[in-house]
Image 1 (cartoon, rainbow, N blue to C red):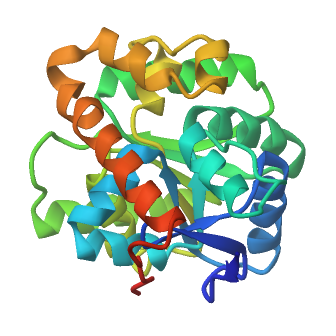
Image 2 (image 1 turned 180 degrees about the vertical axis):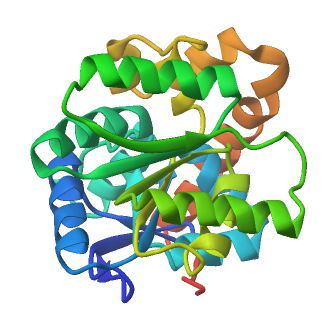
Length: 263
């Protein structure tokens, strides 16, 4: 049913060739505490159906996910597949909720946070809201990169800025798969820290994009809400990838096709 990820030592299950961590929110926070106590550096991939299907199409990206310290079950279909394989304790570890839970948890632990990504307006508004919501949260800094490929000099400068801030956590809001490639490339360039790619969470917490109602999230219908909000941008993600996910999940569950783990 499950196997152990050699990088993180977390229990995982194979979902279409991606090792997804069989965790819930409480387990995720305890794992972060352990990593920080041991001064371990890891990156974390927050993983909805869309990310699983991107991994099906991109073997390099799939390997990035399979080398991650943690691959969180971000979408309810991912959770359901984990439970279907016997992992009843699994719960959704949704990127925006993970940010809130960890920021709250960090107030008593004195963890330092750095936020990288989003427009300057978005990241500043999000940081301001977090400062009000979590008055004891230690915000080490934030940086909004330009919307273009960085020069080597610029990239080195950004790494130096983050290292000078000495964060325990670096939140990356570049969108998938750009943020996953960024985390893989920068894990060794940064002082020991936990890098977490959270996609649109910056926009959600800044109030620039609406989130689906809780009942839609719990019933796996968040995709419908987001599709209705941005149909031109997201039609391919949901109208093509969702049926593909259902097909491949059926093939895996019935044993008609194997999906090996590649690292």
